[in-house]
Image 1 (cartoon, rainbow, N blue to C red):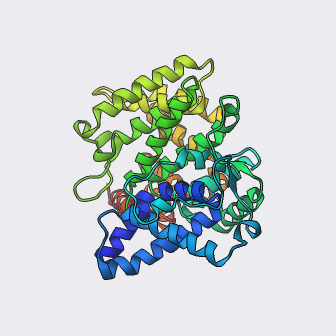
Image 2: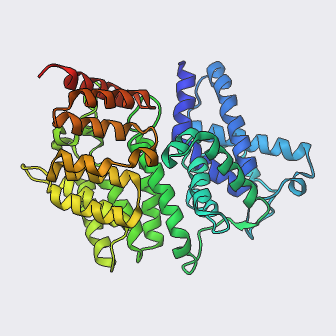
Length: 416
């Protein structure tokens, strides 16, 4: 890839969601904002290759997108009447652009929290809110969103399209909701932030296991949300969960790009400041809750891991927390993680028993196969373990994890 191509790719990873949110506010149309921003990135590929990468790539992209929008509106004077508005508010002419900023941008305000709440409006079904926001705001591709939801890509594409059509023309306010509206809107917003962080923490595609820019974006927006809702325990719990996981980012991959398991990680490379904040937020969220929510339970599990002594974490306590989380959510991924904890506390046979029935619920998920392979290997059932590793490798797996799975398969397949 050329230097210009790499710069465009980096700009997409780093700035897409901020630019889209700002354009959506200015244009009062998410569809138009997405279209002109895509054009802007496409133009950057050829222009930056010819003229060089600009000193301020996001400003260049924003200015180019604004000019595309102005050109569209000059050519089509009836555009505002013929295209349904996706978002509205009561400031300024909805067809106006900030002309004084078209020729140069130095500071780009962050409008993502507004866009987040706009896409999570209660007129949409919960799964549609999450899918649309993860696609638009999280910058995730449709295949990435589909994988996070454990559904087929065409199904997810149709869901996102239906969500856009449903909110077209609804006049949804482009703003952070009032205190009275906040409790109803929070669950979908938290789910989106969690999914964006999850894709950053363990990327489902590509050659990078960790997409730190997605994690950083999710943490930043969640921190803002905690400020907006200081008396709500779950935003604080989600921020705690993110910080505790992200604190280990530098230790999760070795110098050769290979996966390092939690038990083998160099704890001196963990971020002590983030751990301290995450532990404090976990305690705070648990004190605020009469009944711990599922983000609080996950944060408590993460806290057990980072607080473990020389003998390792308290697997019985972790298994008990996962049992509560399994009962609350019914999530197959939670059941999978519970099986791992139970295997550590009660043995591989007990862990295997919890994996029963997950094939239908998780589909061809490499983590299910690799977990089952690990437990079978511990029991000496080497041929079955190898077969499960083969199934894991046949699934869609990021390259860093693929190398790890090949290594584990070779170790299990070798004669004792």
